[in-house]
Image (cartoon, rainbow, N blue to C red; front, top):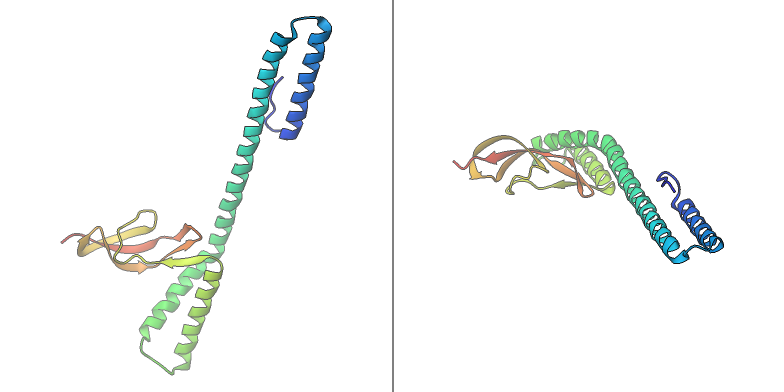
Length: 178
């Protein structure tokens, strides 16, 4: 029997069981020693069945992983451009820090808050970098400056995660130890 890994495991199981019963019938009608021939064949078919089932389980896991990767990729294509808009609004709000009662400034703050709420509802979260150790999986080091060696002293651009995965690396300045 040749193993076809592209078929459904239920079909493989049925064909293995059919072949097993055929072998048992054949060994009984031929009068040969059914235990030796049948036991060897049963062992071979059980092994083939186990392999087919394992292949199927691996396929299911791979499909789930690919679906998760595709969902992340599509979400990141939609959400990443919004992050640059949040950065722009944050810089605008920082310029007018301390200004109260100005309708335009209040509108920009409200817009920034609404976009951040939307991003959070989609699973996007900003992560803090200043004061932490550099993590190459989360930070892009732009330059260094005097400060504690290996610690982040300044942030050019915030980093964000989508679920447990990094959506955008933080662009940071790290201490040089001087």
